[in-house]
Structure formats: structure tokens, C-alpha cells
Length: 505
Picture 1 (cartoon, rainbow, N blue to C red):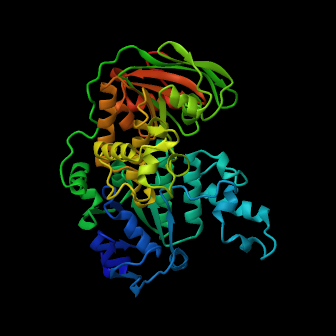
Picture 2 (cartoon, rainbow, N blue to C red):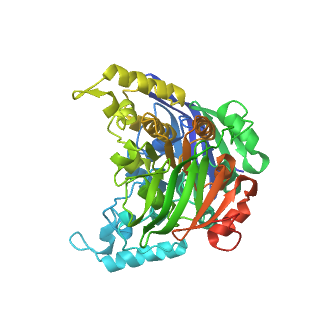
Picture 3 (spheres, rainbow, N blue to C red):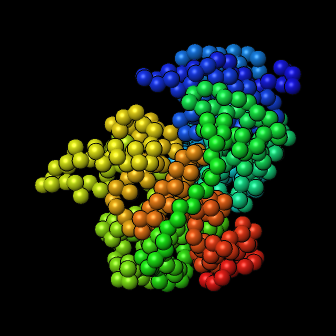
């Protein structure tokens, strides 16, 4: 391609933080009508580079050019003015505002004046964008009434509403199922046809090859290589990202599956889920599949005492238990890693140590005082055990990459020593190397006799690590598949109500 095709050019960008070189002389080029992937492990420097492009932080060295002219954004509003918008990995919508208000936040007065906003016009403009994207979401709905996946789609709509020339998509499919991913692929094709360019950040390498033209690999803050997506392979990309080959992305540790541990019988919550029954055994990893909105997360929240249920019962080792609150669920040796780490998983103003220890503090508290040395030792031990990248456990968790924040949340619940561990989208926003570590950890826990429930929108990982998969459709158990019956086509058909229900329900 000629230099006239270059839209954004970054030359020799470096960024230094106290004691850390986050970026080291990185070059990065985005061409017109190009979908350019930026990949690398958590902590590779992807987020830092995007923050510099957006003007959130200044570079320490290097230069940027937009359409051949020097580009020096001082704040995200400068980037928007220059034609660059971003879909963030973590949901940044205001939950108490409507979809329409979130899409046009900061620009609402174009639908009125400084005193009055015409909500009907605003919602009509939002509906037009949502229809263009093929999204069936009411613009008047409050965001906190939406699922995480729907929030992600609203984030996409908001970024596109700016009519920017470059749209940065940071893990845009992390909460989406295959159906929504296909929809996003069509959206990206449409954007490219309208002359737009996309910077696509994802740990789902299959999507990188499906959607992107070029791939830039970062590792430890350095540019490793730029590749043509059509002339590369997943194995080559993984090796470049992690600096080594990963021969088995989905390690399945041997574990003896023995007696039933947790049993759910006829759980009902009108309008949410109906007649939910399942059993998970010691040493078993039980997967839950289904489309967005099927009710998987709602079922797990009820089992863990976050949300109520109207009827039904929960048993541990054959004995009925009361899980009517999270406190009681923890006492009953259950734990749950939620799908939304920003709102429900981590407290971003607290340290890594406090986030990791907060759920088990009662165990190390005597007469109102926390055994600080024990807390520090336990957290450091867990940081080492699951390979959390953090220079100091006293650092705020917000300073960590998204994947490492997720691992801190897993550490938090492991410190409570649960017998049943519920993992709702546990690898969302986590790189391929860290994913493998989490899968291996799940296998080890199962080998120790723990029972693990895993909810995931990624069928390959469910099929890779689960012993059984239950499919939820419209709030009901639609089918169950033994490991020997696993088939992506059959499970998806079951989720859509088009085919097999597996061996039994």
C-alpha cells in the first residue's frame, strides 16, 4: 500500500511509569478502511498504547501523525474531535440513565437547547443507530435493566454514533455469544465499506483472523511483529504473543468424579427461570451454555444468594441448605466469580491485597483485629499460585491489566476455600496464556475434589474443559451433553431450539 493510504501512524512511542517501561519504542500504523488487530498478553502494553492514542495519558517519547499531520491529543475529547472513538473493555455506561441518554451523553443538547432536551428526538436518533446495527434494544430502557452483553452492544452503538474515522474496539466480543459476534462482524464490514478503520483488540484469536486485515503483536511493551492476517496462523500468533509455544490451549487435568456435591432442585423465579434442576459432583467441571439472555447468569446469582428465587431447594452433600444471602452461601462453602468484574467483582480504589482478602477476612480476624501478617502471606501465596502480574500487592487493583484483575477476583474466592466454585465468564478479557493457566487451575481444583460450575459464551472453552454441558434456553434447561457427545453444532442447535437435547434433560 502507498503512504497515502495511511490514516494513523505511530513512530517510536515509549511510555515510562515509576519503575516500569510500559512501552518501548513502538511503531503502529492504521490504514484507511483497514481492520487492524492489536494482540498480546495482559500487560503487553495494548491498553497503554490506546490511552496515548486517545489522549488519556501523554507519551514519554515518540510521535503520532493523523492523515500525515502531527497529532497531539491532550484528552479524549481531542481524540473525538479528530475522529477517533473507543469501545472500552469494561462497561462505562451510567446504569441509572437510559440507553438513549448513554449514547448521547455530553451531546444531548443537539436535541434541544441548554435548558431543554427533546427526549423523543433523542430516542428516535438512538433507534435509528440501533436499527442500522440490527440491535433490538429499546432506547428508553434504563441501562441497569440490561444484560452485560446488551450493555456491550450499547457501548458499540455509542462509539459508532460519533461517526469517527477510527473506532478502537477493546475486547468488544468478550460478553457476546456467537450470534452477536456474527452481528458485530457485519457491523465491522459495514463500517469499512463506509470508509472507516477499526483497531480491534481481542484475545479471541479466531475472531482476529475472521475480522482483521493486519495484526500487530506486542510483548512486554515492545513491538514484536506486524503480520498479514491472511498469511499467518493461530499457532504462529500465540508463539509470538507469549514468546513460546502453547501446545495445549485447553488442558484437561485428570480428576476423579465421585459423589454429588451440589444439587439444585426445581428452582423457579417467575419471568426469569423455570424448573431448574442439576447436580454437580466432586471433581467435576459442569459447563453452562446458552444464548445471551437465556438466564444462565440469573440462575447462578440465585444459587449464590445474590438474587431471590420463589421456589425450589438447594442441597450440599444431600443436605438442604439456606443460600438466601451471599453471606450464607459463603458459609455453605460456595463462591462465585461474577461476569462483571467492574461493578460486581473488584473495588477499584482498594489495593490488590484488600480485594483478594476481603471475602475471607472473618477467618483471620480475632477480637476485631485482622492478622495482617497472615493476610499478606496468604495473598502473596495466591498471587504466586495463579501467576498474577503485580509488582506490589499494596498497589491499587485498577493499575493491573484486565486479565490480572480477573485473576485477583479468582484469588479472592479461592481464599475462602470453597467446595463449589461458580465461574461466570472467568476468562473474559484474559489473554491466551492466562486462559490456559486458569483452565489448568480449574483442573487442579477439580482434582482436589472441588466441584466447578463454569458459565461461558465461548463454546470451544466449555467443550475443552467441561465434563458435562447443560444448555439453558429461555430460562429453562434445554438439554444436557456428556463429554463424549460434545459438538459445537449440536450444542448451538439445542440453544436455538433446533436440534438435539443431548442424552437427557
